[in-house]
Image 1 (tube, rainbow, N blue to C red):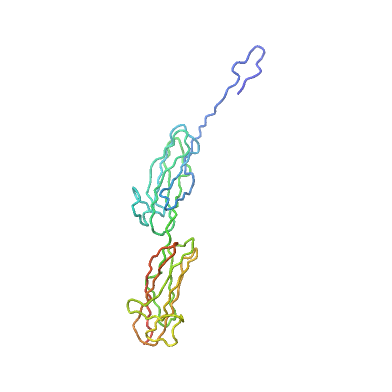
Image 2 (image 1 turned 90 degrees about the vertical axis):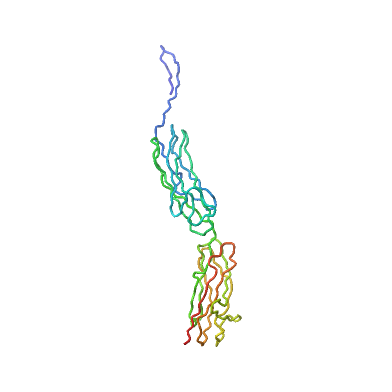
Length: 276
């Protein structure tokens, strides 16, 4: 503000001054985002909370981290966390000193070794001090799994009628992979009442199989393309004309590549006799 042009019977003294307009808006306290993310192997997740404008006095607000789809533990992560020990529950109070507009709290993340879906933690703010109001008071922390999927037989037991001709064996991934997954498979004579395999070539049953020609021995490699969770291989079954006991074939998986681990790697195929 300025003064100027006094009349002839006056002179100017202090002709300039400043008016300061003091903001009296109540600041709003809230999460800086509605969603946060952390990798399971990061160890911690930092959650930022902001004040819409500085306050002239301390502002406080309570925070809490509770179970969404993730499961919390108290105190600290165990030395070898399981799939139901995902993070350390947290609660407390944040304090903004005069002039501050940003504070943060930390959540400890437990790095287990089990393949599992990405999981969530619910974040809440509550009970701001009288000189602030609540803004975004709810948010979600997503914990991204960092463990490779497990590859397994779909079942530990399969069965097929001797006259069916083929047995289809299903192998599954516990979750899809971003890279290709390979695993070796093999079918061999069973341990209990073993079926007797025919060694290829050719990879077919004889025209008139005997009671010691029950199936065609098979081995190979399955490939799961990115996004796939199920693959199969087939075993040719030889239909002889002899009455015999039900017999078994041993199934194994081995040598997964670096994008997967082995889960249930052994199974049994039972050949059900169909001869009177």
